[in-house]
Image 1 (cartoon, rainbow, N blue to C red):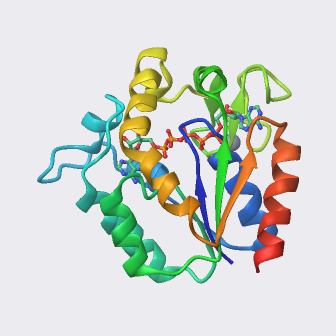
Image 2: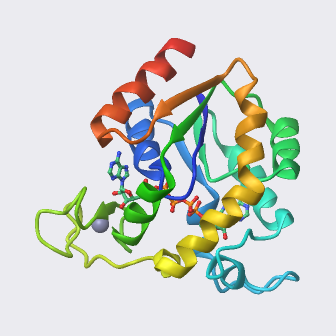
Image 3: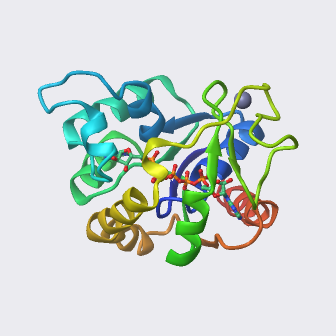
Length: 207
Ligand code: AP5
Ligand code: ZN
């Protein structure tokens, strides 16, 4: 299947994308991870880090290129973190069709709690939460044993900026897809397993 997953920062896109990839054997296309892997890259627009650590959007040409290259190699995929504005929507619509568009709905208060408590594995990419989704041993990845870290942009101040950027740019993207046949809204404030049950049912009903 060709899946688009939408939602605010911290809504659980990465968490559910991982399960989708395992369940359906598809590619995870994520602009956030791709940019983090190249944060210090020098480009004509500056480095991605300048934008990311300020909670702002990285310039469209950089992210469009990432998505175009990834889509070329992927048969089925879950696209996570893109599109984030109208111009990216237009670019995506020229590039591919979608079978299902999932939107994870979560309140702002909960988003802040999730993001400031998130810890990630620098080696395998697994994501945890100090309270809601803690690893078996504090600070250590269950899957590979590496020491967990906090993302540079998960400080309270940058989280507020990211949520502002989301409101200003990406809420319109949600409204754009809401009127399409592929759109399914999921209550993202349930437990990860409950969210997953709804996500899987939505994908199975449309593919
Ligand atoms: P990106 O990496 O895409 O970050 P984001 O959209 O802010 O999303 P997150 O990864 O923070 O959240 P998530 O929804 O994946 O949540 P997760 O599953 O981890 O983008 C980072 C930056 O890159 C942007 O700010 C921008 O600068 C740049 N960028 C990226 N794409 C771009 C684009 N297209 N254009 C321009 N710039 C771009 O979950 C969060 C936490 O909650 C975790 O701790 C998790 O364990 C926990 N959790 C998950 N689900 C649940 C649940 N059901 N209940 C309780 N806790 C839960
Ligand atoms: Zn790990």
